[in-house]
Figure 1 (cartoon, rainbow, N blue to C red):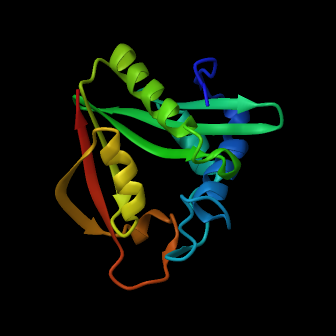
Figure 2: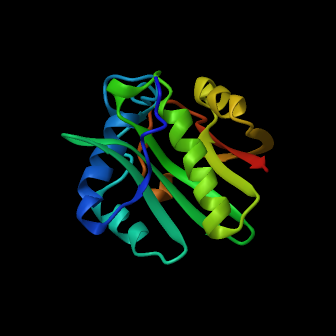
Figure 3: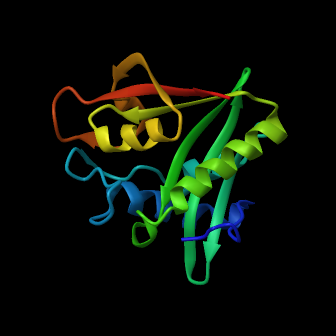
Length: 172
C-alpha cells in the first residue's frame, strides 16, 4: 500500500489513553504478528506511563490516526548522542501492509532532523525472532547485548523462564 499520504503527528496528553490502548492491543492482544501473549502476560503500558513519557522535553510520541482510532504510534527520545525508539505499535488490522515500515522511516527522519542524531537504539524481547528480523531488514543490527527481562518496569510478567531483551542499533 502507498502510505506517502500518512504523516506522523506529535501526540498530545489527550491521546494518552488511546496510545496505551494501541500498545496493549498490539503486544498483548489476541491478533497480529506482534502479539506477545504466548510469552508475556499483563499490560505492556498504562495511560499514566504514557502521560509521564509525554511530559519529557527530550522525547516525543508520534502517531498516525485514522477515523476511529490510532493506526500507529512510536516513541522517540534523545539519549546522549542517539535516539531511543520504543512503544512502536501498528494496529493489528493494519499489520503486514507496509505501514510499520513507513512509520519507522518517518520517525527516524524526525529524529535526525529534530534531534540531530545519527544512531538509533532499541530493546526487543530476544525470543521474538520475527520482530528482530523485521528490524534487521530495516538496517538495525544485533549488538550482542542481552539482558534479563525487566520485571521491575511493570511491563508484563514472563510466561516462560529465561525471557531476555536484546539491544539493537542502527547507525545512519
